[in-house]
Length: 453
Image (cartoon, rainbow, N blue to C red; front, side, top):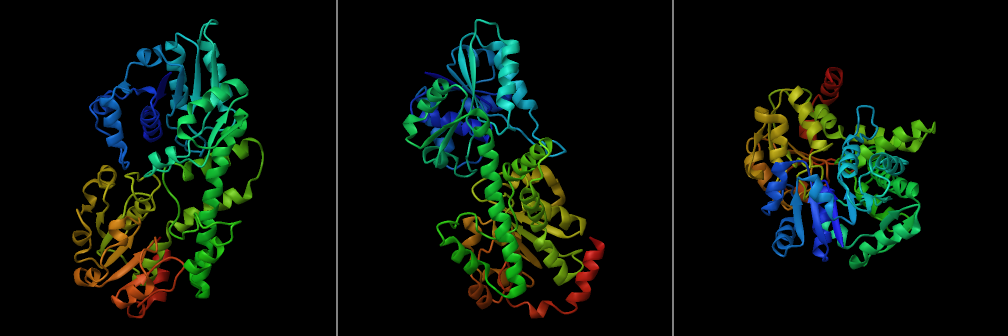
C-alpha cells in the first residue's frame, strides 16, 4: 500500500508521519526544495511536540520519504492525500490556487489508477470540481476517484489528535471507494463516519464555526460579567457542568486566532452569500471576535490614556500555547496598535519569536525569558497561556517592573494571589484587582484615547 501526501505544511507533515508510524510506506511531496532537503535530513520545519522524533524514527526505518519531484511522488501511489493550504482571499473566500496547482501536478504525472483524498479545508462542491479538473487532464485509461477527508488537527497536539481522534470523516459518492479510504485508518482504531462528499466538506466548516461560536459567546458573557460584578470562571464552570453544553471552549479570553477558525468562519460566511442565505449567528461570531481582540488595548487606554513612551512587555505571541503559529494571533494586533501609540515594546514567547521577528523586525525587543521582558516595564500584556507564563512567580512582577500593572487576556492567575502580590491586575470577565491607584482621571484619559483611535 503506497501513500503519497502532497504538501508538507502542518497538516500534510503530521498526516504523512503518522501514517508511516502505523506501518504504511509514505512519500511526502512539496515544491519547496529547501524544506524537502531539511525534512530528508530529519529536521522538522514546524514546532510540534513529538513530531521531529517520530519523523526521524520513520526515516531511519525506511517507511518515510520526501521528494520535490512530482513524477516520482505519483509513480507508485495508490492513495494521494492533498494537504495544501487554502488561505483566505481579500473578500474572505477560500483561495484554491494551491489546491488547483496540486491537482494539475497529479493529473500530469499520474500513470496508474489512484484515489485522490482532499484533506484541505474547501467550500462545498470543491471535491467534485477537482474531479472534473482531473478528468480533463488524465487519459481515459487512468481511473481516479476523489474523496473528501477533512482534517481536525489542533496545532500543538496534532499527533495526539491523529491517534486519538474523536472521529474520522470520509466523504465519497462511491461507497466502495469511501470504504477503502476508511480502511486506511483502521490501525488508528478511531470512530469513522462515511458520508456523501458534500456533507463531509460542510462538516469541517460547521464544526469550526460552532466552536468559534462557543468562544465568542463566552466572551460576550465575560464582558457582561464585568458590568455585573459576576465572575466568568464561575459562570463558565456552572454552564459546562451541564452535559448538553460541556466545558470545552468556554474559556473566556481575547478571542480566537490561528490558521483555522478565522479563515474558516469567513469562508463559510462567503459561501452563504453565494447561496443567498443570511447566516446571522455566524456574522455575529466574527464581529464579536474581532472586537474582543482589542479589549485589553482599550482597557489600557482607559487607564493610562497616552501610551506613548510607555515600556510595555507582551508575554505570549503565538495564537495558542505549544505552537509557533502567529496567524491571526491577538498578540500581533495588539503589538501593531502599541506601535501606532509609539510604545517601547519588549516581547517573549517560547516558540514564536522568530516568526514575530520576521514580521516586525527591529521595532521590538525580543527577550529570551520573562524576567528580561518585564524588567523596567510599566505595563505587561499576557496574550498566550504558555506554562512558562501561567507558572511564573507573581512576586517577580513587582520586583522587576516599574509599577506592576498586568493586563491578562487569558486569565492565567488567581485573583487573590494577584492581589496578595500587589499587582494591579485586569483580566477578562473578572473583577479588577488593586486598580484604584491607577484610575485618577481615567474617565478623561479614556475619552482622549477613544478620540485618538
